[in-house]
Length: 502
Image 1 (cartoon, helix red, strand yellow):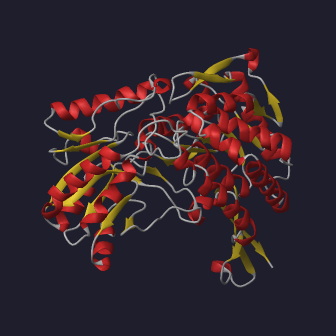
Image 2 (cartoon, one colour):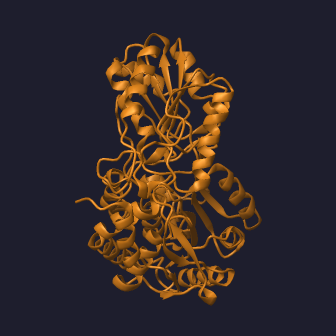
Image 3 (cartoon, rainbow, N blue to C red):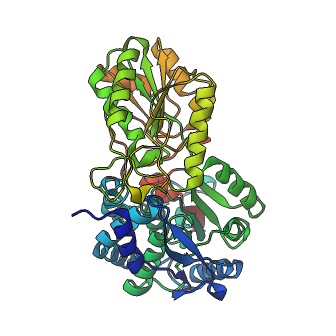
């Protein structure tokens, strides 16, 4: 019998790691400070996590700085391969416990853990950068000798940046953490990982695995959880940190850029999105609803979800009807249930924000064709959870607030267009440019439209861009830089040119 989130939460709490990892040791926060970890599905407190103080954060930064400056971590490729391989094995040994932990503290449906939430990144996120340690071109010799002739030898060398602050979100915590730790560590950097305060246990579990089951030298990886934004902000202002690797909201990304400017920190920012699924007039109408249903998965808490459905006017009524039917049937409920597609929002605040944006869209003339409120008839144990119905809104223009701003919830906006040019204009009309999709009966036509969309990743006719070897990131307000792929690996490297006389 499938456990409920109440039962699963109790199990997760029994196995949870609550301590920080600082300089190779699992430690309590200074003064024993903790904060509650709350279940998004039930509203119940699952347990506690260490609430790091400013002293704890500075100690973690100091440990990472020392490990980079005073050990051979950055130069010992075999050590890096061994440690990352050990971490891969350690995570796999606790995979099912980790799955339950993600469901419990993130509210992610079990269904989502079978793909991008856990299984996909566990298969690739560390193994790909482990391979790159051997395969990457760490140095190259330039042709000729330049201005000083053939005896002047010039080499271009790639080396680690230094101390990386990895700041990760709550929506896909393990996916993002592994896709930051893998390339950052494989490249030879040391890391201070600051998981989202609403999903602390998954990150702290990795800290325990590193401390107990790997040969990582002390200080190479530090894991620090805190609900205090001022404590977290030390990572941006401390000059001992060389690079900020952040995944989260556009507003926080801007703040981190400003805070890091005084010490000229490099930044990688993977931020928000308002991606569009474009349905051309020659598309198969039966495929529209499948493309739109991604908005419902994990309650729409994904930066790359297609939150706008741009559909040719000739297919508009069909699209509205199919989305209404599909969203009405989307399984909403306990994320521990393997059949559930839409679980809870991460916090009560997030739920209130989504409901408020839906209400504002309705007041502005939007037609909420399905959803728009809190699900009815949820089981009693979910009464205090943070649930919102899968919602679709029609009758709004492409410049309306609901069509321009990231909702980060299960909300789809349906907008008609008349020509391919108009579809491209609407798709490119938001400040964001993270992902998107195109459906067309003519692949060449679909690719032609896709190539005009200012977005970092896009799929045509169901094409899937996600994997550890594919760079992911966005244009404009969706961020700076790329995660994954060669480009993501190089994000964590500096470049030097060395010349010498033969």
